Amino acid sequence: MRVRACGVCRTDLHLAEGDLPPRRPGVVPGHEAVGTVEGRGPGAERFASGARVGVPWLRRTCHRCRFCRSGRENLCVAPEFTAWDADGGFAEYCTVPEAYAYDLTGLDGVFDDEHAAPLLCAGIIGYRALRLSGAGQGDALGIYGFGASAHLAAQVAVHRGMRVHVLTRNPRARSRALALGAASAQDAAAPPPEPLAAAVLFAPDGGLVLPALEALDRGGTLAIAGIHLTDVPALSYERHLFYERRVRSVTANTRADGEEFLRLAAAIPVRVTTSPYGLDEADVALEALARGRVRGAAVLLAR
Image 1 (tube, helix red, strand yellow):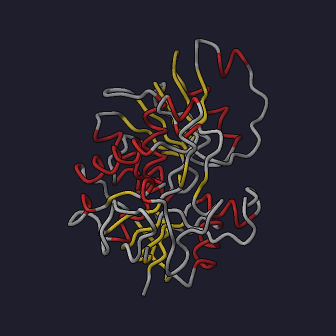
Image 2: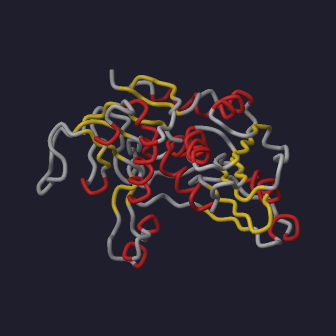
């Protein structure tokens, strides 16, 4: 695939900074790549030359383990991931097994390459986290952190009739949240204005698990969306877990998650906020992300 745009995910930053050791030394980052098919390997027939496709995080699963057989391929015991096991999209070209590429023709006329790229991980994993939180129409939903993934998930939640309360340390992010339809936006250390039926933690700060759990109403669920989280402080059973409050992790995604989210994103349509960089400016984009200077999602663009 010829890369036209590639999103810069926080997972790329975790790999660059050593929080996640690469599974293959020297692997090229980037797992939100959008481009066109330039060549096909033996037996590859799903996409024609020139087709617009997306290269996501999930690259391959075994199809044999009990998780794959039961439709839970995100929990496969022998998976491979783009930009962790195999080279990703911070390059002019990358490869992808055709069964794991997304057909992006349904996004034509809705999202250009720059704004489609963040949908492929930030959007999909945020959508799965929202679903696993159990939040539904009329519920109060807390969103902790408001970066690339959260600003997309928040729009899905608003579209589905939830009252979204955003909690983030970044005052500019709070303003963006209100502009996207959040019912409230305040500092992450403050309690939300009402008990939460569910919450999603996007910030990679384990210290936020405690206030998020404490803010949950009885029977509420906290879904943790990131692949990396700093250590969680000791919990108080009575303050944080009693009344059947739950905490659950979110691990990768299934292809069905991605296909469902991409259809929904185009139908709403979600507004994707991006900070563009040249394809040769990956180091600049990663530093900006590390320092909290990215508005929305950073995206590398082929010139």
